[in-house]
Length: 196
Image 1 (cartoon, rainbow, N blue to C red):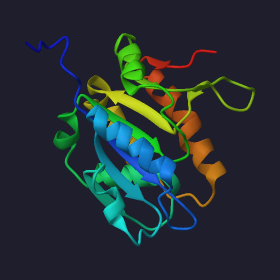
Image 2 (cartoon, helix red, strand yellow; image 1 turned 120 degrees about the vertical axis):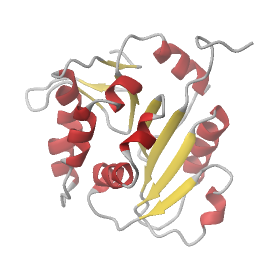
Image 3 (spheres, rainbow, N blue to C red; image 1 turned 135 degrees about the horizontal axis):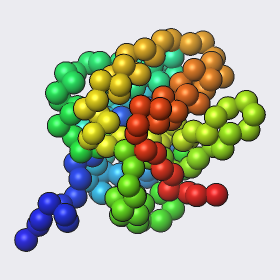
């Protein structure tokens, strides 16, 4: 019998893809397959032209094709704003992910089981520690938000404020490096799977 304590969380992934040659590489398909087989719903958001979407059909639930502008943060904003807040709040976790990472290199259940035990409101895989230029923050290639934060106005405030920027450095400076502290200052705890 499944109980609330053992039931797998309902997770949805907003996965942003970009490839300058308009292809979906084998390592991306591997990653999507692993996430799909783990039970995550995947919304695949491509900033590239996809001549053959059929290769994705076995692993993703929806495909969004968009112009390559604003990088991953604007893509996440556009998809989040394309549906009602109530739709998103029904999920236990929303994972924002992009195609700049490799893996998994070990079973996903180990990652999620470990983080399910951590007392936090949002988490990532790797941290970036303050270096005199940027504050402590989670690397944005994979960030998981839990229900309490998804339901809070501050989540929607942050993503509705995202604007289109022309360079990767602008996006890193305005959003990736500030997002962790934005939520932390509002009382939400964050954690990283990798602790250095």
